[in-house]
Image 1 (spheres, rainbow, N blue to C red):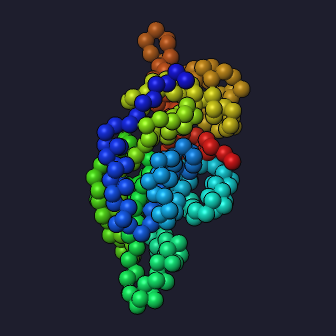
Image 2 (image 1 turned 45 degrees about the vertical axis):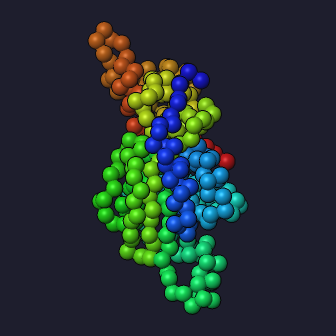
Image 3 (image 1 turned 135 degrees about the vertical axis):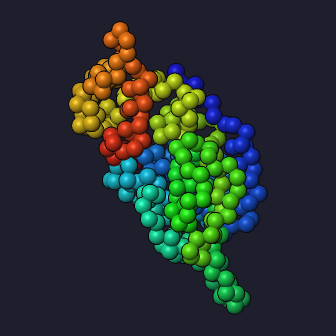
Length: 280
């Protein structure tokens, strides 16, 4: 792969250590993933870190993903023994539902409390996820506040925060964390969704890879959004979009960087339609 992706800054190593250290403080872990890339947005290091810790999954940005694929992934996670909920974190979240599901998962703990006549309905939940998975937006929504900084830049959240909600749910936020090495497909998919910063990539090359994949998997989306021929070569699709969007520089050449930004932004904001890059 021509793209050189090397993304493991120091704060991510520290986050891994903090997650390990703080696990004893929580009852359950909520893993937030990107519904468009359900495999690539799951940090494989978490399995080693969390071990047998109870967990549930939020398939965030499910409104941007292919709904049929959402349902397939929910069934897949269920077969793996993990409850997964589709969610659009920009809409009001039913925190009571999340609490109820967590309490069901923690049934053994609450049964022991009852046997010891302990009345403690509080559930402490750690929030984990890769950069730009929507953790901060989710937390602000659940806590009904505007406290955490939110942005489409990976790694905005960098300090440990306890957040109270209006239910018996307390959240421990953690910064988005990636892992040292991933395969080409994973690296590309994380880059398409901006989990890896555009600034460290050649987004013109990235866009060519993206167009090649979308032309194969969702040709109608390209045709409907840009009025281009999805059966053409990726570079020809790229240039056709540049022409249609008026991305031309002096001398009549195509402005590939501006066109790349248009295409990637259309995908990331859902203007290109509902797309799941990783299908079952």
